[in-house]
Length: 138
Image 1 (cartoon, rainbow, N blue to C red):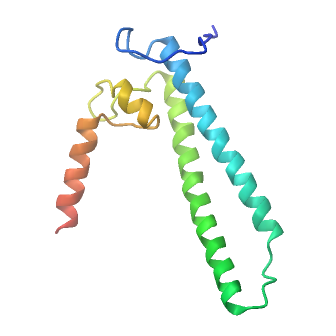
Image 2 (tube, helix red, strand yellow):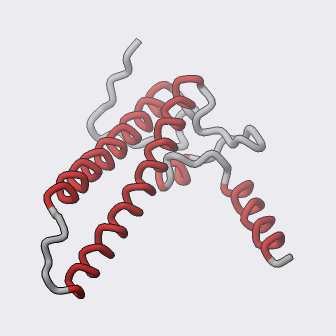
Image 3 (cartoon, rainbow, N blue to C red):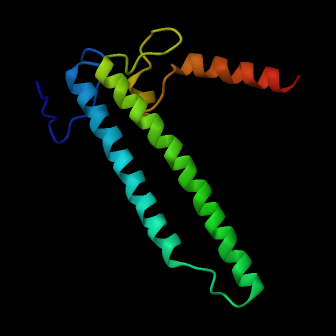
């Protein structure tokens, strides 16, 4: 059964966590984000195909090459982000979206609004970051 989202819908703590409407809201949010990333990637591809290394000046060529490298690195990050978005959509479909992978507790609407691909609650994420800092100092 398809859920129709009201145009001004925002998830709230007054309703059951990860009900059908909330799941559909986050699914739409993730699909829009993915669409934006794919459009940007397409624009990048077009601009990279257009721009050869026609600059006669070596400094201009170096600058253009640096810009291309930076653009490709940005696209690689976007590709990884798209994979995380697709994984989040998969979690919506299997019913595990919105729950911490570590504790099984709800991640929380505010955190999901800010980072819809989150897989850990704020507390679990902070624990992970503390552990990483501790191990990096070794």
